[in-house]
Length: 184
Image 1: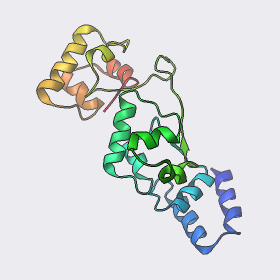
Image 2: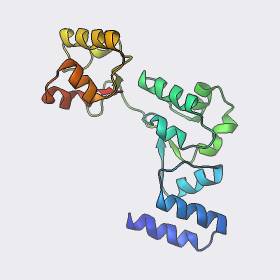
Image 3: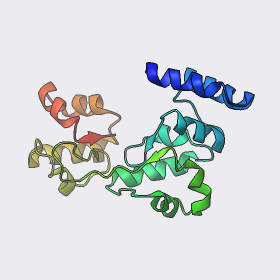
């Protein structure tokens, strides 16, 4: 953190007043919404990144001109196992010209995650995963999968891991294991 702050101060001495103001705002709130391509470039210079394959709706909304619908669509795709490997993949998913997303390139990272990895398993959306997808989670048996799917069908989507635990009356040990495999 100290090194980041020193770099910010050194760069701030040779910048325009507008760039200094942007840097100061980002230093105070590095996770605020970026308002322009210039702010995206400055955020990238300061070391901020956004991983396209693990970004949340809130992460996507930090980028200028990304709508809530686009952010939700991108998160839905990654939740269902789609992995973005490059800026062109994002452009295709959003049906946008590549040139429109090009200003975001310095900030974006495309980290590939092997779905079969036991080190960092892909998280499934508990509200949309099929029974076959849920069967890939080592700590779930057929009875628990049927209970999970049946309850979400009868009572609607789960709001959180705590909601799932309460509705299915699961013990804390099982929830501690499931938190690595499920998202909401």
